[in-house]
Image 1 (cartoon, rainbow, N blue to C red):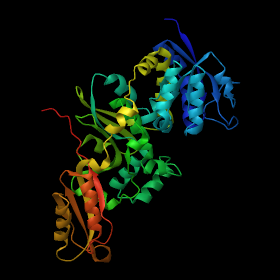
Image 2 (cartoon, rainbow, N blue to C red; image 1 turned 135 degrees about the vertical axis):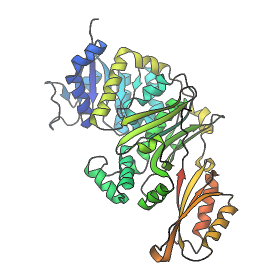
Image 3 (cartoon, one colour; image 1 turned 30 degrees about the vertical axis):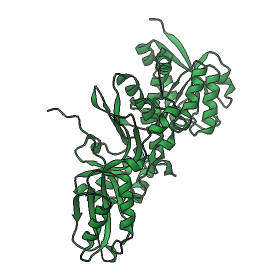
Image 4 (cartoon, rainbow, N blue to C red; image 1 turned 60 degrees about the vertical axis):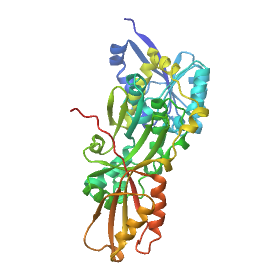
Length: 441
């Protein structure tokens, strides 16, 4: 079969951009042998054209003038890797309006402006491919859109931020405090100097917005997602939860009920130690999906990094060049916001189990007071843990787990518990997520 030459333009020549350039230039022969496509990096645009990079480009390829890419009709595919939202949005709109298909890893942009960009792509007869936006090198987007197309997706539970997973893994296995685990993550390059977007849950929310829209077929807004980060997690709670058979993970959760209402949330979650997601450690990502026909499927791998992300981007370039992405994109049907906004379940309506830790004064009758408050809020206790010995200020930790309870009731109970003169600090509350297991037998 004769080779087809495909010219690619790249906007953004940072870490991931270098990875993409490296794959296209060094693996061109291998890609051509497998696909009959000869990828050619025709133009690379970056405001910095002087700094040395890990990959060497041919003379004349690197420029700071994006019009060289926009005005070149021989370049069919534009790859946006500048990050952020404002400039990146304008770049993608210009690429689409110039008649070029777009490949991107920009999760924040897609989560905030994806609906607008997709409408622009449809208007111009182009497509947007975004496999690398959610889980680095894990082919999760194509898995949902094509591999699971025959299924109604009922739920997904994902570890989609490597920074948080690394921190929580170290706090669990090495008994590190949060600041110590974060510092180590920064030293190893797993966390940014300003880690707010990661540890606050924002990065995970961006990814969940994209995954949920594809999985459930809804136009999703970031405001639909409840977000709670890991900044206040204590190694003590990880330890107490471990004694009760749980492992702590920051989960991205999407669930769809029989009435087509969906719950979307990011928060620290205690899960059973024998659940498959509990064994996902370090900077790795994993997403467990439940389909109506296939049952449980789990995707696992490296969720970030130069070459894993570049792998997904180049795979998208190939898919666009083969015409597969255009067909898939054209047939991507999302229920519009005017129909979906009312189907987003509020966090107050969530029914789940809860872990509650109280620092109580060491005196008789405290547990009776606590039990009375919980009973008044219709909360049933399923388990309790109390160690002998005293903590700070003559206090002892009292850990309680509940039966499935509505979030609004727990929120009210926490306020009441905080008012007791026997409780010396604000109660800690972590949701317990019972992920079903698809087992034989």
